[in-house]
Image (cartoon, rainbow, N blue to C red):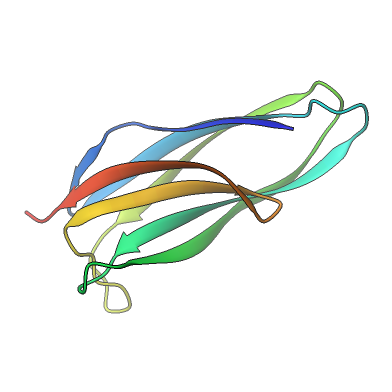
Length: 110
């Protein structure tokens, strides 16, 4: 299996905003493979540490040599259940529970 990405549509967000990202998964094996596609957002907390939250994308089955390209948007808005703090955040892909790629971006308050 080969994973390329994630590629972000921008590196700086000003709240409230949405972050779009794309990635591709290719089955490099000889048989069908079933993949659980997720992503983790590593949020910056008030104390400066990170806290990761996993978000589901889908489950796909890829045949030998087959590829799947995925585009997703993630909203960053202040909520009662999640307060966003300024600073460096990260987005990481997760395929079958295994971290595959990590890209950082900056979140700014208006």
